[in-house]
Image (cartoon, rainbow, N blue to C red; front, side, top):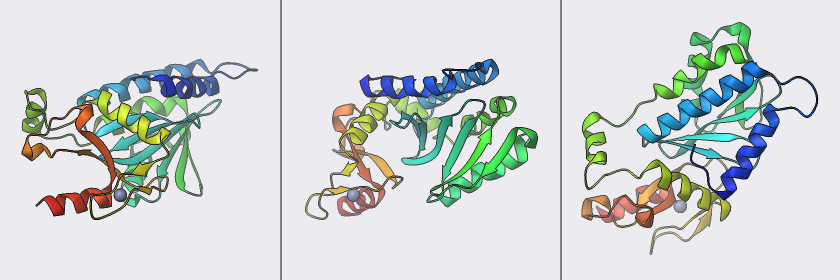
Length: 226
Ligand SMILES: [Zn+2]
């Protein structure tokens, strides 16, 4: 996983939860969790629609196509997995997968306020990560364009950096010039990575041409440009 200053602390907190101050370290949980983070980092670098983001509350968010898909929080002997209710479609897909593919002895469903949650025990983790490895990716021709001289997608490093700065600044959408003002976003509100100069007009997919907008403003911007 790519790390910057803020992320380093967040990940240290994440690891701290896996290694309890007293009592036995659950070696299987440790191994399966780190193996999972490695696999997710691989998905992130190969699938421009997925971005990992370590939070200050010792969790790791998996963002997919610009919205928060799933939150991973470590506990002593399991990982707590949360799917945002707000994104009912994503939460439903995760639920179907967990119920159909994971051994039910290793999974407990728990009620949450904002998130649908599960406790996933180490024995089921290896299979659990495959859910993210199978998430839809851009088509081969789109990925080819990405590898070319004028890629359409932002790199995982640029997405992670922009997302961290966005979180640190307090989650503000800059708005669309002349249409909407800068506004603060609710946690879990969908965001999108936007080309400041549109890709169709030659705008590069680099950090310097990247802004994070809320999904509504991004649609408005696209409609205005059309
Ligand atoms: Zn907005």
